[in-house]
Length: 506
Image (cartoon, rainbow, N blue to C red):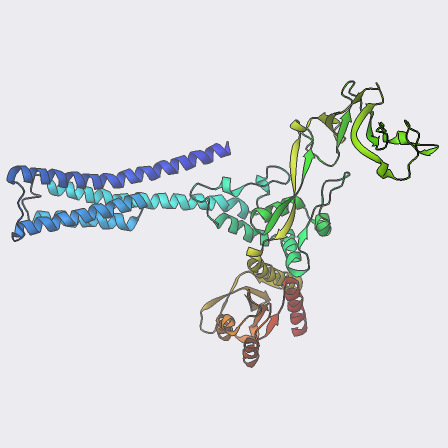
């Protein structure tokens, strides 16, 4: 039902867009028709004469060029949904109509011509209001597309639209047509995930340790798990697989197919699904597999275990003993039913789920994709910055401070400055700016914007955090101006050093 409503809204928005194009184009069409009719009347009555020296000819030519420009501007505004061009085209049309009324010329002198021009101009100007309404409606649709993840009651706010274990709502299918193919929804979801405690901890481990990838561990007694994240799985109130899916869906992690698991179509579990080989005649599961081997010297073919008896290793046919297995050559496999004695080459196969006691064929099974994950190198700088900031905020809150990410602090000039985060205890508020570099060092130029804010706010109330480290020139500059700073390679390092700095300062 909800999907139907969404489709209906999209259809209505598309219909409105089509309507506004028709409204805008109608003004242009009226203008085109009136000019063509005027030209036909003029040529029929007087003929076509080229008289560039005649003032009436010049005046008519100027009006005609003006109307043509107005037509082109109106067409562009209607098709591209531009308010500015529609206003410009309509205003130009009205001005030309007034000029035509004041200085009547032969070409555009037939009855009610000015009224027609005024009507065309008014329609184009009115259409700009229609354009504005559609743009507002589209903006609201975009906001509604990401609103579910911003609602309170959950760390990410998208659990309510989950469609099954290991699968999350696909934002590309849940956003309006105008939003699809753009990065905004994924970026917005990613920012929300950085604020989720468990998701943030997973990303932090990639950034702060030698963890390069996480692989699932498959056991028959339980569902697949990730040993590297075992402690998170024990403490989280959410499904760990769902968190990994969300991180991969938003581009933080890159998932690579690790294995495909056969899942029971009845209980949807894979941990206790087993392959059964059965007799092709009586359907019994008591099937024994026999390897057939050939004695290369005499050509005898027997089951492998028939060559090995109480008297040692010898051929049942020629009676010759052999010292090396190289004298036996494997030639195939047969199956024997212990229930009915049937010998056959291709056993019947089926899958059996011991969780719900259900047998099924392969064509009826469900396939579950199991992934290993690595950190997406393309968003590593973004993740390093966001996770570092939030790790600092966690450390500050652990010391009893209230934090705001980002935060605003007013300086001596009265201007409010935005910082990476602000923290407070009682009436006093402090500011932190975090500066990261994709290169090996944070240089002087990169810290100057923060320095300017620190000077206005007061250096004693500020702290600069540089990731991964400061260049010598930048470090000397901060020390000369007595601005406190911290350097850290990763979120864990930054968090620990920030905590130590604050503990030693109090």
